Length: 237
Ligand code: URA
Image (cartoon, rainbow, N blue to C red):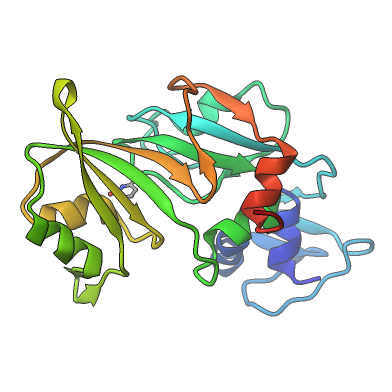
């Protein structure tokens, strides 16, 4: 088995983050530093250490969704000592980690798991997973702005993939825009709206693929049902 796949299956990190861990010299196999890609291990015989600790596969897999509040980082630990999403799932007795990320100041649906393969399906660019956000903005978007955002807009010299964008009319709540994208570029929704001159006051993710946040209260989590997990895996419609 590839080393990064084994690390992911142990619930330490997604496969892509496991690759980063290897490259940054945090991984040893049978006591030897392995900081290159391509290492194959035998999970039955080889001993793998991450940051000096032996890791083993956790047989029980956990799949949850958290309603992330803003002012939390989507990492397992934070050098600046800010609250992380891990503080909100302390009652789960497994090394789950966030699938993908939401900005510190963004709230909403965050999937967490200790199943590296599942995390890989949801984050690998070859799988198109739509994510929908509600942005509170200072004004409605014009037809022209909506069309520009839908067709793709230049961010750092690279055009964004086609998106779905609509104004939502909720007079009592001010102006809101619903936007669906499948890329995960840094602060993408905020930067897209900024590019057409709209001011984002708050941003919340309401769905990832087939999974919707529903009325899960902020700061709370719940387990995903088997049907939800299978749908996200693309195994049923
Ligand atoms: N786009 C953003 O701007 N922020 C997020 O957290 C997610 C998508």
